[in-house]
Every structure is written in C-alpha cells, then in structure tokens.
Length: 178
Ligand SMILES: Cc1cc2nc3c(=O)[nH]c(=O)nc-3n(C[C@H](O)[C@H](O)[C@H](O)COP(=O)(O)O)c2cc1C
Image (cartoon, rainbow, N blue to C red; front, side, top):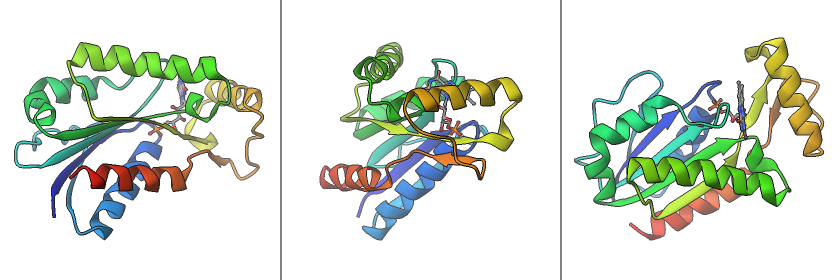
C-alpha cells in the first residue's frame, strides 16, 4: 500500500475528472491518494510524505497552467525523489497526425526540462470539449481542430475524447512500479 499524490491543474475541469478517475483506480488497488487541485491553489500540502506522485495538467494555448511550475518549484525535491508521472491533457493527443503528437511531446519536454523533472512516465491523454464553458471564438477553433482530427463535435455540447481504457492501463503500469 503506497501513499500517492495526485495533483492536477484544470481549466474546464476535464483534467480534474481524469485525476479523480486515476485516484479512484489507485484506491481500488488499495493505495492511499492525496488529491490536490493546483488551479484552486491547494498546493501547500506537498509530496514529502508520499511514496509516489502523479501530476496532471491540461494544455491551453501551447502551455500548462503556471500553478504546475510553481508547485514543482516548491515541491520538486520530493517529487523527484520517488516514482512519478506527468499526464498531459490536450486536444492534440487525440490526433492521428504524428506531427501534432510530436508537438505535444515538445511542449511537455520543454516544460519538464525547465522544471528539472524527469518523471518515469509521461502520458499524453486526449481531453474533452465542453461547449458551454467556451466563448464563441474558442468553441469555433476547438470544433475546427476536432474536425481536422475527423471527430464531429457531439450535439450534446460535450465531446469527450479521452481513452479511459488506456488511462486504466497507465494506472496498472504505474502501480506496478510501486
Ligand atoms: C482556450 C483553450 C485553448 C486550448 N489550447 C490547446 C492547445 O494549445 N493545444 C491542444 O492540444 N489543446 C488545447 N486546448 C484543448 C484542451 O487542452 C482540452 O479541451 C482539455 O480537455 C482541457 O482540459 P481542462 O478542462 O482540464 O483544462 C485548448 C482548450 C481551450 C479551451
């Protein structure tokens, strides 16, 4: 039984959903999790008393929220001292175009280099589009990107692209390292 920090930064709350899903799958495996919402500035409890860390962050306009870098500045030594994973969440991760996947990898690589963090796992997770949380310009752009990926936006206003099975597989791979 390990104590695992699951910290997340989320704009439209999809990464929050992903973080909760990951935590619940780890708890099913009898691990103890500590969920921290970095966007809500819940970053004071760190990773010192944890055995592993997972940090999940969405990409907006080519970057991660500043709170993620700031959390790593404060708690990097603890995160670097044990098994860790970085989950990036984006629309590009749903693309079949290798150059788009390479672009996400590059955004992650740059971020990790600047943070001086080399997690054992870097997982690019496809996100979601919640029309009601977007303004007209954002919605138009994101719908057009989805169409480029040959995905028609859902009529309900919520299009979830996350591969939950792959995420569960990641949890299994991560848990095997504990
Ligand atoms: C304003 C805005 C900018 C975005 N920029 C990017 C981007 O640069 N690259 C990308 O792949 N996805 C981009 N996305 C898609 C988000 O990463 C995706 O919707 C993700 O699920 C958001 O997760 P969150 O709700 O946790 O913030 C953007 C979404 C919004 C609303």
